[in-house]
Amino acid sequence: MDSSPSRKRPAMIASVVRESIAPILREAPQVCGMVSITEVEVSPDITYATIYISALKEPQRALEFLEGRQGELQKALGRKITAHRTPKIRFRIDDRSERGERIDTLLGL
Image (tube, rainbow, N blue to C red; front, side, top):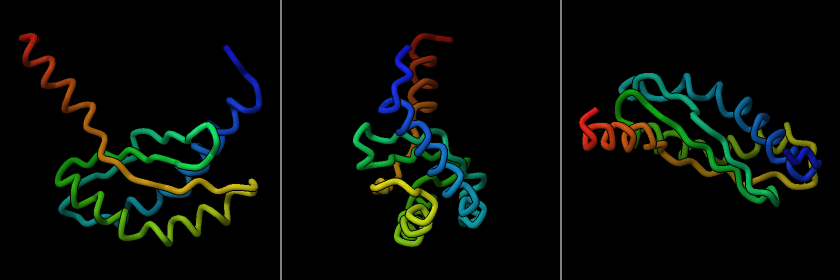
């Protein structure tokens, strides 16, 4: 397992991104149900932080809510990360659980 600083840095920044974004999830529209961050991937060069979200209902609406707050969230993240570069945040709906359920259905599980 490689524990070089270049490998640890994206993971550390991903943790800060998660901490910075998580509180805003409570402000998501109620029609979305519970909204959560399932994963944060930070590119090795720290250019991008892709935040995968899930919502019990209406994930597209949750995504639109977060994208609408992106500028504010980006600024807040910039204040928390003391690194030379702050990754540009982008949001994606995490549909991996849906894909897993479809595979289970196809396999008859």
